[in-house]
Length: 190
Length: 190
Length: 242
Image (tube, rainbow over all chains, first blue to last red; front, side, top):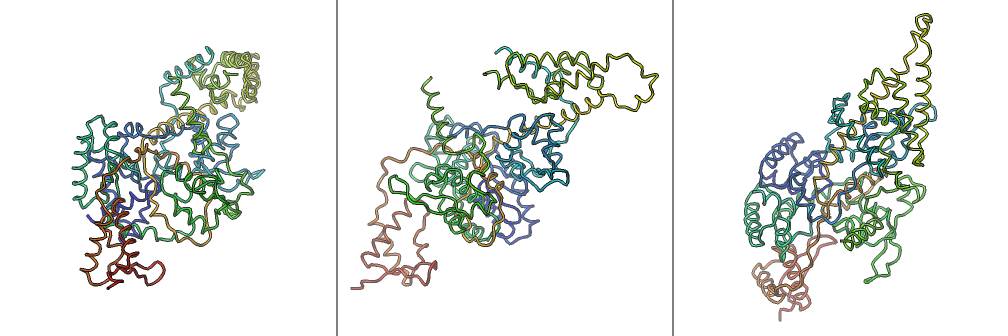
């Protein structure tokens, strides 16, 4: 009981900095496993309670209170600034290749994409989604890139193993084709 | 039910600044009196629920979520925990705003972060990452802050021009200003 | 010039080829080289007619396709020249690249969905009081930590602040509070912790209590003591006993 109250206070105060189970365990002076169990049961209870407007999320190793998704539209109404721009297709493709193949060099990314990828890499670095992780043991000692903790956060992943499995196209081909053809024609029309 | 959830979401996202019953009423599209009643009953229920770690406080007509007083000691403990090797989210945010907008006053940093920033500034100063650089030519002559040579050193930058460019949509003040004028013009067009 | 952004709907030659393959309903493993080459060149020519900078990668792919096409038009003499059997069909190499690229293109789409969903979740800034002030020792932070923190901040919504209160009811008077404080201190006989004088943490209450303490100190009605820097403050009645 008491622990749940304290945990809510601590998570509330931490805001989007979040707290790890380890941090909570050292403040509460209980075992980390117990902390995890309490968090788990709190998360479930809060999730199910339809009076509650927040939920406990885990991205990476951080537990955080966040508003429930279904209330987003209401928050939006009071928000002063618009949502930050989402990533471009080029940046997303680059990020996907890095995420699934890390550590990876820019050349390897470009081999898969078939185009130059300097700018998307600069964008992803600026957003703190990827970072350098040493250099490859190859001619020219190219920089290796990996994804960051911020990447997990930005894509709601607990860990890299939560990445959706890579699979070979079962996406409706026709739909995709229509979409692209539409885009192409629109572009030509203008 | 639904309203309580939305109110909790809104109060949570509003942070320390709180929201008025009037604002809540306009978002929820219900009478202000009804909002007050819901808030009243929520406040009582939360207060009595010993699993909860927050409470709803009223200051004038502003409603705010705060941590329960009896848990204050735990929050202090968390703050006391030394984390010598890294900087907190709050410190990193503050540092980023100063680095990209220097020279800058505390008030300007707080405008961007949306929260008080005295402590992060004190610690960044103590760490030698930022320093005072005269005073702004504004009412109250507020102190201007800039980053130091030690900042460059700690982040392995040769000069400030080595700071990675920020992506559009990130909060530098120039961009916020542009955004503002953009919206302003939009409004005029209508 | 305006076209530039808009016609750039393809992420590169592989993306364009995938599009053509889908549009023409072609089997990716059995690409009709002549047809795909013609379509591809048509697109590249259109881009050039629109005076767009055609990225060199598109031209390299065009050259590759033309080479494949001309080779496929050569008379079929593979039955006589066995050594060609071991050589990979260039179409296979192309198909492999296309399939590999397609995998990530689709993964990018799924990431985009996750990203969109994530924008629907909001948090709040960390409380200032949580911020550790005892920080020493070498720092182990990178510029990426800073950018990550910054990014987190940009995702946070700042909600419109209510217009600051106009006129506030005068419910709390400093004088009244001075009176109650003095009574409290006299009743307790021994010094009271400064913090314990404030039994509400509402801002207005705190301000009034604080002002009352200052006023009482000024009037020598109370004595405030402290054992050392940062130690707790104690307040006692007294001072001018006269």
